[in-house]
Image (cartoon, helix red, strand yellow):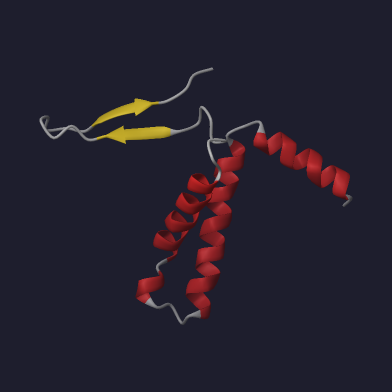
Length: 89
């Protein structure tokens, strides 16, 4: 596998929501490895670690998440939360 084909593959992923799906799956796999190496310590739950990793990556990306973001607005006056999807096509 050459570096050029790796770059082309990353460019394809970056142009689609598959980048963020790949990031989420990779974060979960990495968190599972960390959890197993720490003898399955409950504090190092793979789901919590994966969420933390994805949040860090998204906050450090400085807006490159673009139109694929979902924002939850909790309205304290209503019994149900309302959802808003940012961006468009």
